[in-house]
Image (cartoon, rainbow, N blue to C red; front, side, top):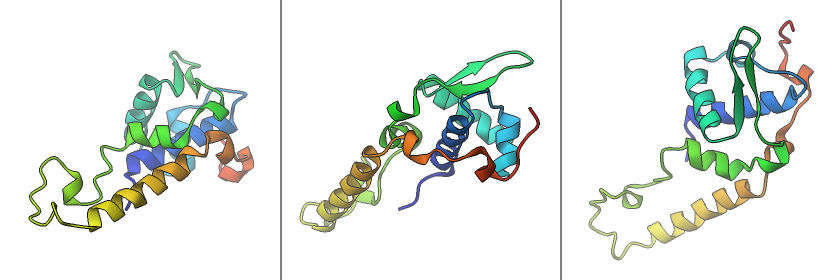
Length: 142
């Protein structure tokens, strides 16, 4: 199983915002710190804002900040809003055409594995991931 880059970037943006809780962060600095696309981060930030995890401040000195305390941002919940689906195999999809699905035992095993994966993430919050500003290497000018 592999998470999408979108989910990975969402978690990274939240981690960066949590680390800099004393100020607003910008898409530009976050893209520079992680060396990832500014355009892609804009999409990530928009979804996180719509979902209530980030708040956006418009204007010349605007930026992003956490909309909730890190302890209230559950990692499993973040992934549920950023991942398009958790269809590990064809039989997890609505378009399943696998002929052995009614008798297959793999489906149950994979459902159990997925439940363990999401269950683990549900036990953690953003507060468990907070780093120090210097852990990010680059430190943008304030």
